Image 1 (tube, one colour):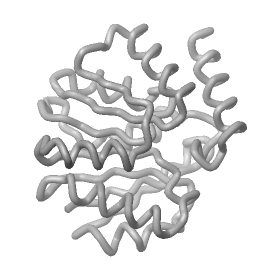
Image 2 (tube, helix red, strand yellow; image 1 turned 90 degrees about the vertical axis):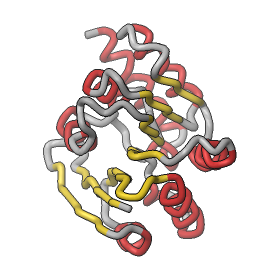
Image 3 (cartoon, helix red, strand yellow; image 1 turned 60 degrees about the horizontal axis):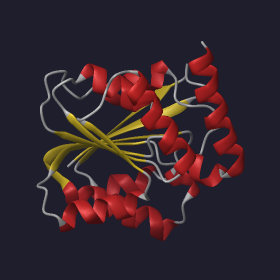
Amino acid sequence: MSKTLSGYRHFIWAAFAKHAQTGAILPSQRFLIDKMIAPIPANYRGEIIELGAGNGALTLRLAAKCPAARILACEINPVLARASRSNLDAAGINGRVKVTSDAAEHLLSEYRRRGQGKADFVVSGIPIGNLNKKTTVALVDSIHSILAPGGFYIQFQHFLADLLKIKKRFATLRLTPVLLNLPPAFVYYARK
């Protein structure tokens, strides 16, 4: 219980200090996380990229669901990145999960530069609704460019302002509301 309260305290502090980066005042709850990771098969053995990992709530559930997968997670806020690493260490998950404290744009650019192949899944909690249009379009384009054909980009948002920007770039897009999350959210399932 104290671990949970500590995780919430870190997240809430980050939310108030840099709300535009964090996008929410509470970490994602299990209802949202379940919807976010639903399309990823439990036996998946490749690499999953997670953008905007926060305190690692989704990262932990994803690592538990897909024990053979490698997860490359980034979180721009160094306090939350440290909390994410700490939570992963406490859960005994190491080696196949790497958390970097960096901007998603840099991580995606480096991924492309290193020629690491194409990702099958990009899961994002980045509050793209808080970004300007140019930054959002550049981020969505970068995500599209590193996805393998048929790959999934899974994004959650608390409002639908950027739905059309994603729809323009991806072959198919499905939307699911998650009303039990606090605050309620929408999950975008975009397929290349």
